[in-house]
Length: 231
Image 1 (tube, rainbow, N blue to C red):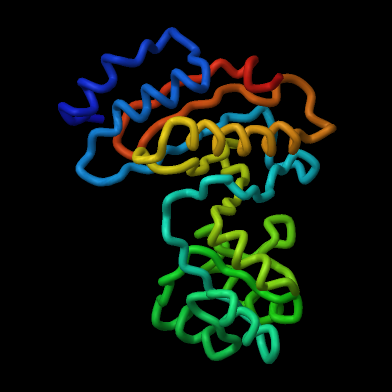
Image 2 (spheres, rainbow, N blue to C red; image 1 turned 90 degrees about the vertical axis):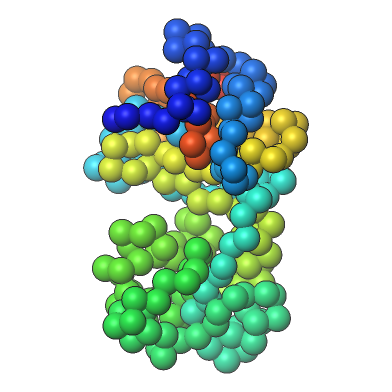
């Protein structure tokens, strides 16, 4: 894969043989985020889990103290009083069955998170083939299937992110923007890592965190010292 000049230059500042402390890694990733837009800082966490086993699945959500820096568009499936609550709490879109053809037939996907009340999951289930592969399906573990739609919306707008294993047992999550102060990125990253460490499956044998890498959207990855993150 051919890399651009900026990437090649930035990569020279990263020592591939070094496992960095979180503070040093964040400083390096921030320095190397030189694109013309405000790059997202992401964490990529390679685990020793086998997601094919239900007892080794990792899925949950955590509210980052300083948010993600991204404006999140929320779609809520609810009816009656709960639909009114969702509107009042600041949901971008609220609806029920009438949204199904819009998503299925028109390919409407102008939202980043889907929240649903439990009684609407029968309706939302019809969209499983579309929402599932995009990671948009509401889930009780992530707090997106709930009767408390006000809390769900406020948490998401405040910086709640969902984490889950992908098919290769890696967790990919944003921890903020390159424009954030280093201290805020460090707070967000620590909050995320605390949640991931806590989510370790009790049935797992062997190493839980195999590697943790921080990177910006266009920059090179910086590997962290996993042992220090587990303390």
